[in-house]
Image (cartoon, each protein chain N blue to C red):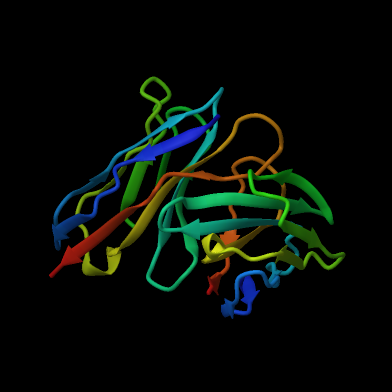
Length: 114
Length: 114
């Protein structure tokens, strides 16, 4: 079974631009979550989707948005990029939206904002 | 809100040494507890988990016991190998609601020397 895939793996953008990151979950998984990883703040929760519905959102500004499609693929968008948005963005999927259920992480998209 | 505190390290050990990475949490009720591992250039992999008090999670020689009385979930391994060199994250999923949102500690970098 193929794992969680994220595209692109690396991205360089300029301050003020916008970016869209993509995540394809493991086949059959309907729950997708996004996390931001930075050296200073560590791993922080961004969003959680289940069956195309956003079920939970982290404490990030409105410039960060996301969505999930009917095939469970998910995208996240960051508008008006800031230098502080440089981070590794990780996507995770699981088969059930239930507490304690294992989440499988993708390799991440490394975003650099210059 | 819910939080996780773990020793930040870095931790440097010789091969076959005993490993302990401390993790304590603050949460309402009985959260689910996890240890994830991140190898260089990769996403996170679930190492082990425990979903109720006194449960012991174990995998690949690593163990951790859910201690409600001390709100702890310390990671241990009796004999580390060079291949265990990675960053280890303690995490929890809150007890309330059906969310899979993970709250992570800052991570502990482990280096094992031959």
